[in-house]
Image: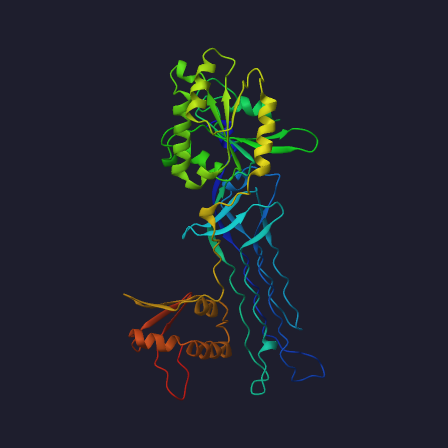
Length: 437
């Protein structure tokens, strides 16, 4: 693998674990002249979030590709004298503009990070558990009840970078895109006389004067079948989706050797773009008729203009710089009229609702498994070291309708039931007592 391919990374799959909330404390006032002090256990601190921040100085996901697991700090436990635990520190991961974040399991889009400075919480830290000072009642003035901290969200995400550029160079291999990029802008791409010289996207700033400029991207050359992954097709097409103007670079003398003539080259490019994303058909286009300094180019240009009289065409030579300034002005003028880009295929950004919950009960050979966000959260936050906490857990479980749902599913006395990390033997509740856990 070349250094160019190693340095530019536009996909990454990483595991995120937000911080757990700290546990609430069970404690009581112990003062010399207060023999029966009340509960004063403090709350646990909030677990740290994992936040993605758009950094305009980044152009690659290389810094995330080879570090697969990221974990935010847990919140501290509460303590006596109503002392709250410290919140866990958030973990901020920087990503380049144009990064899509997807849930690895569902494929749903979580975030579309474009604007520099934008921050988005991708994995949320758990809230701290409440200390026993919150559970005192007139019937129970000395509660031995405290909550464990809520577990932080854990998820695997896939990152996909789609570079943001004003103009994207589209062309077959060896059409002269890299040379044109180097003379139009301040970029210094690798240039060679063989196919796929450009293996990764190259960005350059085109400066017309002190007040006018735009970003130009040279992307790996297309070949027939690129929309199905042939050559470097999908690597290329991922990035072209967000360019506001397409600059087709055509070799006017390729047909004099072994390549297709300009008309056929344009048809290949147009077909691959439309098959990948039909919306690209409506993107503003400019054609750079390149290598006009070579013999035979004029005849090929005439044939192309006859076939496509409505296209904006700039005849030039990237090598001799012939008419390059005219191309800069044309591109800037077209950009001024081009609408902003919205990737229509990515209109929905998915965020799991914290209220969304479905209770699921599944019969397995060794017992029953109960699943659901609320009930699993209840198990995770219950401190089973204290009898009063267990009684509270039983009461809430019944109030949530879990026992009724188990009976409807066919649970029998003595069956094992598992909820998250908890396993217990089911006992039918009686009118005068709570279900036994």
